[in-house]
Structures are given as C-alpha cells and as structure tokens.
Image 1 (cartoon, rainbow, N blue to C red):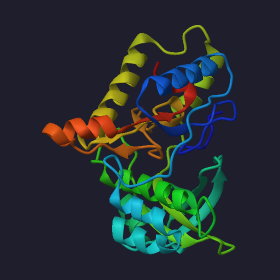
Image 2 (image 1 turned 30 degrees about the vertical axis):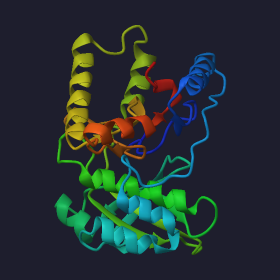
Image 3 (image 1 turned 180 degrees about the horizontal axis):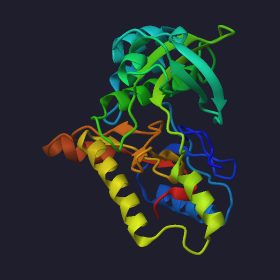
Length: 293
C-alpha cells in the first residue's frame, strides 16, 4: 500500500539524512570533500566541513537573514516578508498526522474557511499542513527561523507550474507550550504519495524492470520541466530525489520540498565579478545518496 504521506520534507528511515554545508574553495578543502565522498560510497559517515554562521549574502534572502537575527520577531517578519490573506489554524479541521521528519510535522487537514478553502473551491479538498518549529530562544533559534522563512519565500517566489508543488497559504502560530513559533505551510495533498513510494511498490512486483523506457522518459521530462521553471526564477532546489517527487491524480509528477532551495542572484560584472568569484563559498547541499559525483 502506498504511504499516505506526500513526502514533504520527510525521508524513509533507511535514507541518509540530507545535509547542507559550506566549504571554502581551495585544494585542501577539495581533498577533504573527496575523502568525504569516498566514505559515503563505502557506507561510512560523511565528514563535511562545519558550516559557518549563516549571513545574508549573494545567494541569501534579505528577509530570511533578518529572521536569523531575532527569532522573537519571527511572526512580524513572516507577515512582512510573505504577506497574503490572513490565515489561522482554526480554519482547518485536522484529520490525521502523516509520517513526518525531524525537521517538520505533517498533518492531513480539510480547509473549512480562509484562503486555502477559497482556492481549493471545495470544503472536501484535503491539504497538508507542514509545520516548521522555530524556537523562541536557544542556540538553534536563529538558524531555524532563517531556514523556515527561506523555504516559504522560495515557494512563494516560484511561478505557477503543473510540475511544481503549490503553496496554498502560509501562517505563523505559537506552539502548544509557548516555547516556539510554528510556521505552517499549507500544501495540496496527493494521496498517491511520492515517486519513492511508487518505486518501492514496483520493485517488489517486478524487480528486474520496475519502469519501462517510456515511463522513464516521462519521469525525466516532468522533472526537467519543473527544474527549468524553477531555474528561470533563479531558484535552485538542491535536493532532488524520489522522496521529493509527488505523483498527481492525473499521473504527472511534481517537484516538492524546497527546504534546501536557494535563490541565485545575478553576479556582478567586470572586476567586481572576479572578486566575488574569488571570495565566494562553494555550497554542498542535498542527501548524500543522491549527490552528483
């Protein structure tokens, strides 16, 4: 049976955790990364250089950078950066809790009021509430605020496309114990699950050839279309894998989970461009099992 989870931000227990680290360009760092890749291939741990404190830069977002400065201002920053119609958790009937990950809690819900109900056009339409917890204090507060707001900003900036997961609504609320803010992303629910769910089922039925050549071409076509639309908006996904690809009711595929996505701004020209390229950081993001060579 296919998992009811729409695989937004989640991964199966057997999959390695995704990562995002930064390393300075240079020979020594290149050797370190090569060694890390050898360890990944041998099943060992990935020892990537520690990521320095995040700051607003050429690939960053001004709003998410501000969120990192003071997590207590997070609700106001969400309202200022994302805007849109007001929404609230009381506008939803929560039906079930879906398989979740350490970074997000997923709940199946039905919108009865608010922007998501108006956009779906039916009170029977189900949605997924992706809840990102942002602590009010502590060492992880600033980075959690920055990551959560960046994901919402990336999804809001994406053009409309049949192959990109749509952000129906977004709002902020306090946690039950009052120790954190919770950023809630309201997303469409796809009961057929992810490409990973589908692949696992087919592998059990016909392990020698789970997909025909025509089916593989269709998968690649849909993913290429999704990436082309995102790249035209200067947004890089950085974590493409079967768990982050959803199957729609009509059979086409959608790219989901923009938790590691970032926007690539236009590089400066002339001498400023050369200086920026010398000083830039290389960023290594993704799930180790699916990283390119």
